[in-house]
Image 1 (cartoon, rainbow, N blue to C red):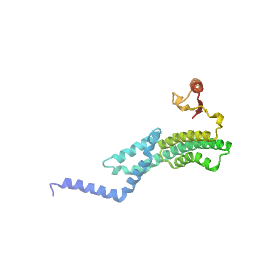
Image 2: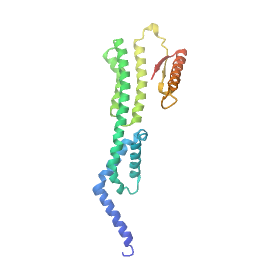
Image 3: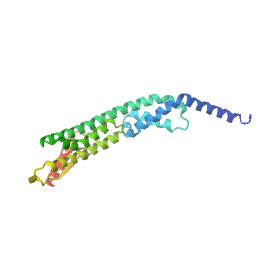
Image 4: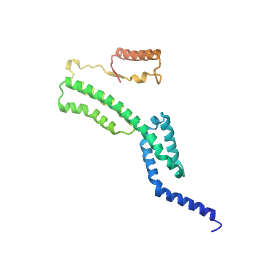
Length: 222
């Protein structure tokens, strides 16, 4: 027993640490795990903010540490920083997506009203985009919001096609195909910072539109 006294003291210390963890720190550990599950899908967006990046990095270090017990006192402060910025980013992402979907819904409603579409047909046209909008309202992943926004564009184009197929006069059966030009994809730089940048960007958009029209497409900008 005396020969093993150092090992026994180490074991006693470990048992004391574990007992303290389950008695006083387990709730903090569970809070950390829950927060990580919430914010990690948005890691790329959070890493663009220095305070959030630093705090999230420390949270990852703590949750991966073999003996995190002495670090858990940092958790509440770290979570506060990361979740605050995560909430702001999510709010902005949701608002932008919802505004974009509202524009699409308003455009579809205007077309349906022009054709005096009945309630059942209107519902069948609007429902897919409205359902996507409803999902975005509760979505907590910024990449998923972006994906659903792209999904709404496909639903919008499909809705336009159904309206035209239903109400287009027979003599106009030959409708030009639509070409979607994504304005953002024509930007070569992250930011436009000069008149030259602006002129180059406008020229690229104009060329893309003119080329599409010359190829007998009708153009939609997204």
